[in-house]
Image (cartoon, rainbow, N blue to C red; front, side, top):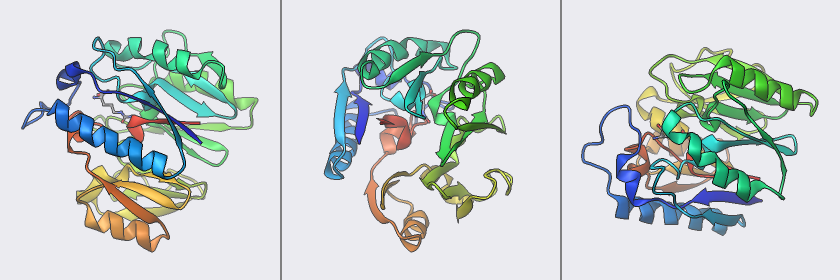
Length: 252
Ligand code: CIR
């Protein structure tokens, strides 16, 4: 497995946030936390490819939003935040030659953080960042590859679908209590965590190991009870910019 990650620019202190970070983002600490994330992935046998930071794009570390990989192809997205749309070129260049690329045209918008894959289904959050044209484009590209795209309406306060849930494996999804209707994920088994730990719903599983946000004991215990070895990672500086663990890599 290969993970594409992207270094943190000095401008990360100006990353998009729903509420201003208090205390402010510490870019040095953010880089240390990001390095630990890359080391954790490498320790699991993942080949980590690191793209250079782009000072013109404060949010560029959140590479997940720039591409959706499924069905042997990658859809290069058109991120919903205009300030982020220029992030995708470097990601597309890094993926070119490794996987077939399809570029999402305007007026479609879609952030990878809205996409959660379980087996042959991708659930796509209809957030403020992802519009119906974006969902339709993804559906059109993936239909011939045996992948079904299901649109999931999101309340306005949820930035991305995976802010409140994440894939555990092809049959199980981790969901923060009270965040989504019970029937959102069809036949999949829903593993619940308490609402007051909802930030920690965004876990990144690699096989039987779960990278999880440090400081959320009930989520960690839930993951271990579900059979995962857990690796807690400090994510305070990603969180200040409304980011979490899956946001910082594209897995191929
Ligand atoms: C943004 O608002 O776009 C970034 N500050 C955070 C993006 C987090 N990405 C993700 O959840 N996939």
